[in-house]
Image 1 (cartoon, rainbow, N blue to C red):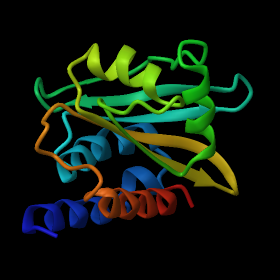
Image 2: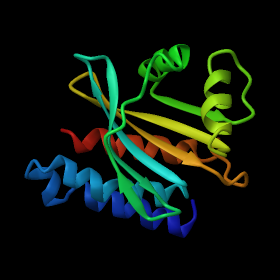
Image 3: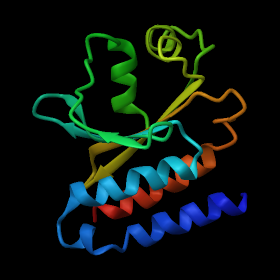
Image 4: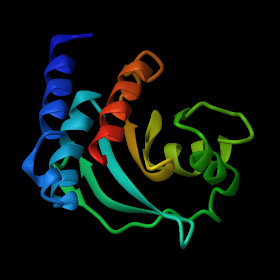
Length: 167
């Protein structure tokens, strides 16, 4: 692992001990966390999606765009747009999609989302609490030189840190 990534992982660990999290200021904590997590993986965009089981939907409570250095929130993932892919998002701890992926489960998402927005790859990592899906961290890359498969161990490491935030 390179030195920059190690420093970002260390920053994530320090954030997991922050007062914002332990004082119940979860949204403030997520706002501080998402840019660091995105930088750790050299992502173009990083987001946290809260899973709302009562509506069976994911709502973006924080998204960070590294190109513009801007944050946003409030989007809701439309499950009808990518129904097969959406059911996969709810079931799998870690998903990685490349824009060239042609498998039936993700081809629609690869064409209608990744290619539409000029993305080369996308990844999703679950965050669980009390044995239930709490949310998901998502990362997007525009740079073809970023090899997400090699970084899957880093995604899993960030996921493990994320799972400990909520407890």
